[in-house]
Image (cartoon, rainbow, N blue to C red):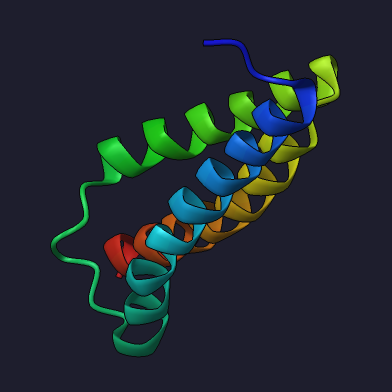
Length: 90
């Protein structure tokens, strides 16, 4: 199967959209309830760093689907991680 570059970009944007939107319910629930007992600090720390690295990778290779999705997901993940750190510190 051979795809045109614009078709590959569309796949990338669809994947970026779906994986980022899938993350929203957890972020919204965490902000509303401030209940982060079910969230592992270690896992979320690693996840946030990983998403940050994906963002850097996207910037280096200049691929907008990676940049946009990971910038938004990084912001959401970081906000949840900060809430978790504040919650744990209490």
